[in-house]
Length: 223
Image (spheres, one colour):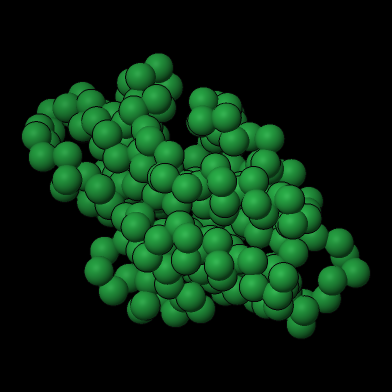
């Protein structure tokens, strides 16, 4: 039974496409780059922003830092609310809590923004722990986020060999699967997020689900 469950946020619990891609578009424009097609900016959903600016547009680390500052000019005030919660998420979280699961958010998004999103959708109450990155860029890798969430939520008496049976990490990108594997957790990939075709399979997700109801069934196994 999965007693401890870590959730990614963007693309897993909510669909943040318009807010994130429009804010990336805004940041790129500040560097003289015009990108009218928001669909082409979907790869920015999930990974750390700095990594994406450097990988997809060849920015230096210094340029990526400046681009993130421009991104936040728009996202922190407008983009954060251009977001929708996937249907059935609130009911699933309620059912998990009723069945005594310990829940955490493990997101690469800065923690203050994660809290604002959870408050906006009225689901913050379901999470025992909320772990994101720091606004100054620290704890930006998914492995670092997962490590901190585990430190907070999982008793030290639960040995490494027991983790796969008792802890699940849920996410929509390979970074979530990799974060789970780094600490011996069961990985659950959701195909309704933003992973390119075949990414979750190639990353070696233990489960891949197509709907929220399928996700709930996996997480409730053992009851």
